Image: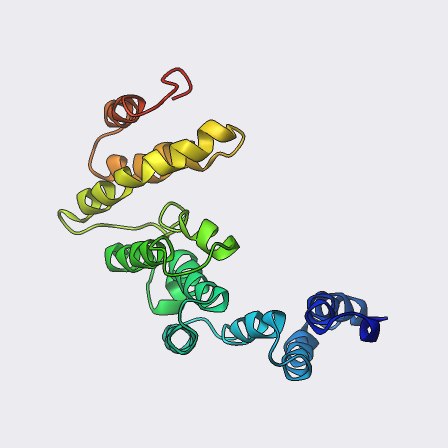
Length: 220
């Protein structure tokens, strides 16, 4: 039935079927080959361009970042470029080990790389999309295993995280079931304050400052 649909719609359905066919074949290793075939078949469509980005993430690490950066440069201001930038930020945020970071290392430089990605996605350079929307959360989702911080670095990260809270608050006010704001404060910032010998009092201070900016202080 695909042949009776407009080409862009064919591509959207065909992209979904890549995953379905891979699952039915019970051969996860075949997914990338199927995706390459899809990109060739539907070249020139939105779905194929977005799928090209997925093909750049086969091996996480510095070379992947270079490839994603090059793709974004070659497709400026597009949704596909936003996806490439987001995936760069996602893997930098979650997979420090793939970039040579070891347990106990100081992840501060990597955090600020992720923050830069998030700011780029929020800069207005890209059209509205799921990649732009999800990019705002990347600094909060940042993960480092048993991190230690050189003097002053935990404070730098805390100072960078707090200005993000009002935007998270606006989302939380619309839907309190979304837990990104309390996670940002209690977990991410809480861990950093703990590393500095602090804790409850500092977190209370964060909530007090945030409540002063809220339309609904009681919600905070």
